[in-house]
Image 1 (cartoon, rainbow over the protein chains, first blue to last red):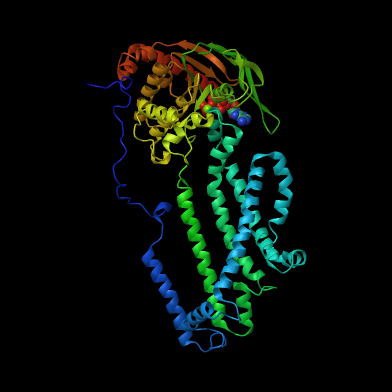
Image 2 (cartoon, chains in turn brown, blue; image 1 turned 90 degrees about the vertical axis):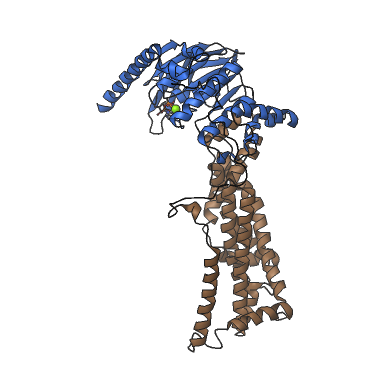
Length: 294
Length: 266
Ligand SMILES: Nc1ncnc2c1ncn2[C@@H]1O[C@H](COP(=O)(O)OP(=O)(O)OP(=O)(O)O)[C@@H](O)[C@H]1O
Ligand SMILES: [Mg+2]
């Protein structure tokens, strides 16, 4: 019997070399219940979209009722024309691009401030008992309040201009980001922190190189959730006191029974929401490729 | 190289319900530099607690620990730690993990790059520097953890069941690697294990610990780690001398387990 002594040459039996070229094709036989295998299917998504269009078409063609008639339910052609007109002539003297950009810019500003305040506060709450004690009451008290309930107050305090709307979005997003960041900090494994200390890292270095990257996945998730909430809040907020913005356009159009414009606005909001989520997922893949692999 | 002195160490955990657990009682020993000490004992006998005190993560309720006459008051790079698993930073490449300690100290890049290359070679992972750690197998990840610890040039290396999560074959190979590194670097190593065979094969000194309260039950001076340099691992583990020691230690531990079970049944 010949056995090799691992002590003489420990690497000899399994000195594995990095594979050359690409990953081999996956040959899994069990995919049902394997989350990593469910990434969607583009052809089926296209079919689904076409299906929705067909349903819309059929409902419209076959319908002549109180709910579906020419006043209440636009055709696809009318909506496309409304979008085209919106971008060329505008609706009620405001170009659709301007409406879209104004709404988008409000969301971006609200999110920006929510992130630059929410992440540090969430970190503070995850790192210090004192700060946790200080921030817990406001966070727990304000978190369940629907932002729209505060709209009257915000209008009185900040006016009906941009500031009031941005503040409202900030308020809508802030708590979500705080909670996400705090959870991210608390989720760091003790052995990682201990290892970093044993390797001579300072507290600041541990914050920067261990706790922050470890919290990034949770922070990203909270940003995505907050973005959704912001869009919902914004459109409702634009009902009052806004001349420009997708919500303002939708509500003006409703008053004149321009359902084509209403639906055009709704579709643009939907597309923007999806686009932003795609962008976030793209960033996630670039910035945190280790997500879910710890 | 520094001596480790442990004197009258005691650790009592206060429980939230008002009770307390005496995890360590009156643990005293000296360890000369360059020894490889293995800790063995039934679950709950305070092995992790002892290691965490040595690492500086816990401060004992009584007694003192000094390394080179300096009292241990907190974690420091002179005492490196290797965990069972999950302590690598998955947001860094293999090379960045290995160079973490030197980078935090601000050692210049060219020097760390050369050091990382040579360490990866030592642990049998040459060419893996740019890989992500989550792309590696469990055994390879532990090699990275060893290299990361060595890169910091600690005086003493503490390992809490470093091979516990590996399969039997990988585990034997890694035992060889641990011995090789110990011989080559001459560092003091303290290694916790649940495997009697591993404790006997790797340790040139072995503490068998007993629970309730956690204490050192018996000390063995062992020849096998030194012999492993010249003889084959499998033959050594099959030798009469090794088997006899293994049975002796095993029966000790079985006795303890039975006592625990007896207590539990009351
Ligand atoms: N943080 C803690 N709080 C309270 N009791 C603890 C704590 N950590 C450990 N203990 C108790 O102290 C005793 C020793 O624990 P320790 O983890 O050191 O044992 P161990 O020898 O490492 O066990 P194992 O072999 O299972 O890893 C156990 O009874 C355990 O329940
Ligand atoms: Mg343990």
